[in-house]
Length: 84
Image 1 (spheres, rainbow, N blue to C red):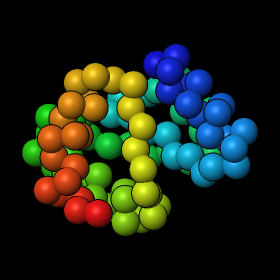
Image 2 (image 1 turned 180 degrees about the vertical axis):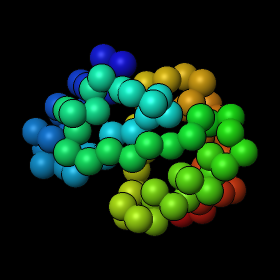
Image 3 (image 1 turned 90 degrees about the vertical axis):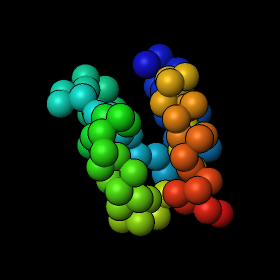
């Protein structure tokens, strides 16, 4: 999504560490990210556990998504699943 690439460029210009992610088997922008994690679709039963593992493995402290469906779902589950 173009807004994700704009976020990536802005974050890198500010010296932030960014990990890209997608549930697609092949994402054409994968090569633009310094690191990448594949996650199951947000509707999959193992999504929360996979996200929890990625947060732990990569020490993730923030998530950006321009996708309104993903954003709404994350906002609904992020606090109960990942307090703090």
